[in-house]
Image (cartoon, rainbow, N blue to C red):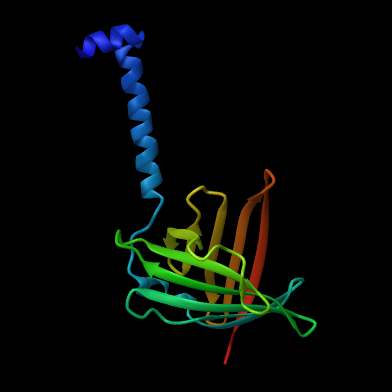
Length: 175
């Protein structure tokens, strides 16, 4: 029967198997793009971080890992007025891959995203004190790198209208 299906469809069996193998390899590579690790491996992000750029003065407060999560509150203030907030969590998924979940808020705590649709970025790479979180569609990366005891670099790398845009935030630890 299988031979009949192949003959009826006009497909070459070897061609079909090559395509199937290619799909399998693609899916395997995609699944390996996520890193399973314990949250304590991300504790280098924890701290109160401050920095300034064109957007305004920024603060990121990252908690140390506790249980299956880390929590972050972010704010951007320009000319004494809040521009926006972010609430971010990193949660240990059931598969063992830490997943960053991010939401934005305007002044007045008005959410940008729908209540059940935060941006999600599974951990894609972890090397020492550098973590790369990447969206499933590969169009957004958030890179956290602890440069030394007092500096954290965060890079937002994203595709926007067919062009890659990179914003770099250099934070220093604050008391």
